[in-house]
Length: 380
Image (tube, rainbow, N blue to C red; front, side, top):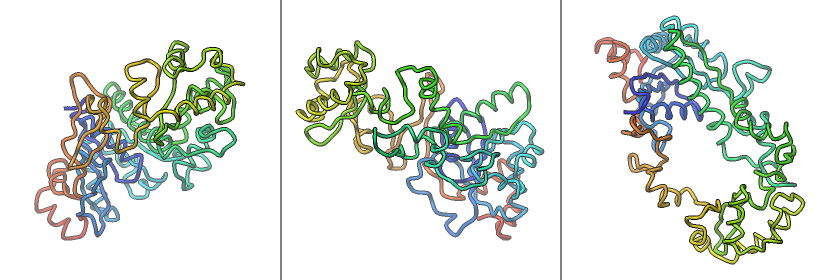
């Protein structure tokens, strides 16, 4: 039983960060009811869709007023609703915050967009790469003299989006236990990714680490020789990050680097030359050989593992960092808890597979009503 056991979350099915937030809540034990729109493939299971694990799925034709009424009925006993549509979409459907909270004043209404619910760009289309462009995050990711490199869609969609939505919803739920009132949570990927950049903005403001508004020349963006990645003799890679002097000393010791040549550590003018030297040294051994040299030390060096390698690493195995669900290896719930341990008991549901049971047990519809709704095309 996870720490959110007993909470009921309604999720209006979408793409990317909002379903990820729903997965986080479901992983922690919340009952998450995902409402999918009626479609020809509504009875098909979403294979390999990790973000749908642990949820219940109901399929409704949201163009029908009777389906909208069913959503509102579900909201009456829900703790929160989350959605990831453009601003105004749910209002036009008749299931915006005003309508839903009229049925349940304590409901938390979580909204996920790239630009936010307001502002001159709020109605524009976009994706992760665009949102992290506006926050300053993308500008800082890449090597010196080269163009910015998108970090997959981790920083906007999931780090600055889904995780902030989940955090915002849980925060509002805690507040609702005191006030008895719900509220709208307006999550913007621009603002979330900017928040993730707090340390870099702080360093730029204060001059810490001589931080510059350029990419690839600073302490944490591959500017430093002791915070970068290096190729090994077998074409694989190691990550290096001993920022603290005592850890840096261990790096020099294990790599048999010349003390005089590699000091002072923070002489930025010498970083490019020292990086070239470390590149040469790392190429003299395989990744496994370097792992053996650094194993058990505080030198802050680790192998760079592929997605197929990571679940097989002894540390990840010992921690149960990855799990198998319906035959698919995937990251397990995070973080871990000492008492209310989260557990994934099922993978992605069949689309609409829980329609009847949810409408009966949660919305209070009897079998005859559900049969009539299905016959009239309201359900899928």
